[in-house]
Length: 92
Image 1: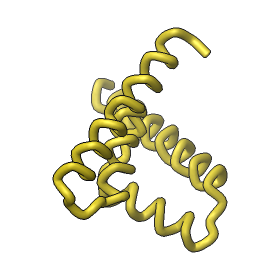
Image 2: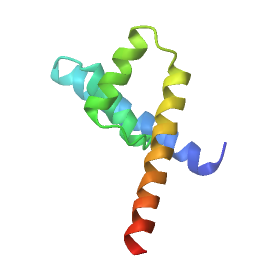
Image 3: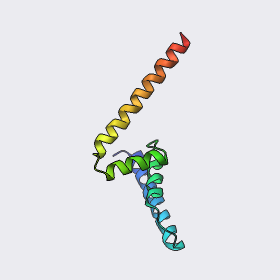
Image 4: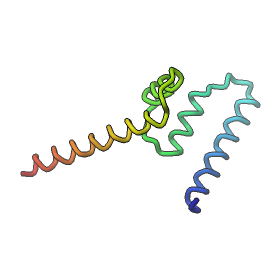
C-alpha cells in the first residue's frame, strides 16, 4: 500500500470517528446512508447520493457487488468513449 493510500485511509477513519463521536454526543439519529455517502466521497467514487442509494439497494437485493462495480466501470468507459467521439466529430 502506498503512502498516499495509507494517508487517505487514515483520513477516512478520522472523519468516520469524528462523525460517530458527533452523533453519539448530540444524541442524533445515526444515518448510515449519510455516512456511507461521506465514505464514498472520500474514496472519490464519483457516485451521487441517489446513485449510491440505488447501488446499495441492489446489493441488499442480492446483486453481486463486484459485478455491479464492473458494470459501473464499463458504463463510465463507454461514456468517456462517446464523449471523446462527440468531441472529435465536433472538431472535424
